Length: 300
Ligand code: TA6
Image (cartoon, rainbow, N blue to C red; front, side, top):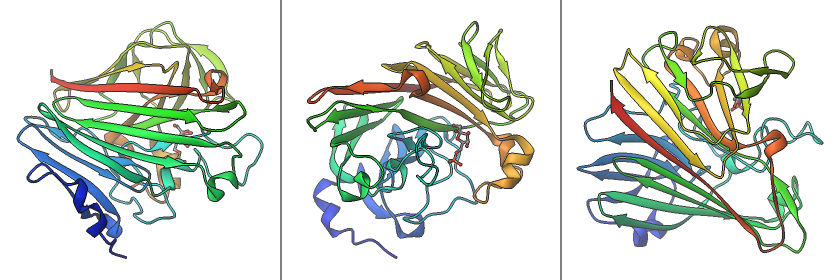
């Protein structure tokens, strides 16, 4: 189904940003300037491309991804909210929450220096309350430029306190998972989801040699992803985020996922700035919480 794009014309900036029909006819904002190319879908406020000038595409998107209203896009940066993974008190609830399959609303597109900021939002309604009783407003600001800046702003618009989890579940495109290394988590404790959630301690840099699914705890530091195959390094820094999830499905899990190509596990690694598990966020009525992420790429 091709979306009616007329209502988005008012937001466009000539020769900078436009709203077009993307894959599956889903509307997306396409940013194209001499400094950067970027894409974000209204479906899930889902970034699917960031390519600063002089660099190759930074994000991985699966060739098998589904592009419809009922499924999350496989790749890019899904927003997990208001719970991470399965919902503890309801196994029928959608994994990673409902934000990544909602149709967000476009609030504005603005140009700031060499960057373009796209702002989208979603709010509580009957369909969210089916799963989660809270009143909330979630605003997402994505700034495409020589760096990628992300801000997830959560407001408790209700009269009672609430608790939520959040993750920016970024799929980083890499040349070869077996050569990639992640630095910045040395000495940090983590839950190993591939080993009955055993609590372990990271020693040194991370090399991915099998299915990896870890929640690093109480960590606010920056991560560096070294990719000798693509001769680049990606730095991910963050604010107001106390957990980092690292994921690669490896062979078997990749085969089991219908929307991921059997061999694509070699070309991606997820680095997820988040507040999950024991670091879920509590918000009193009227309060606001902002998680910020900044991504940079440099040549090796
Ligand atoms: O972030 C890691 C993780 O929670 C893994 O356990 C794995 O399930 C992955 O997310 C993908 O989840 P999805 O629901 O998108 O298939």
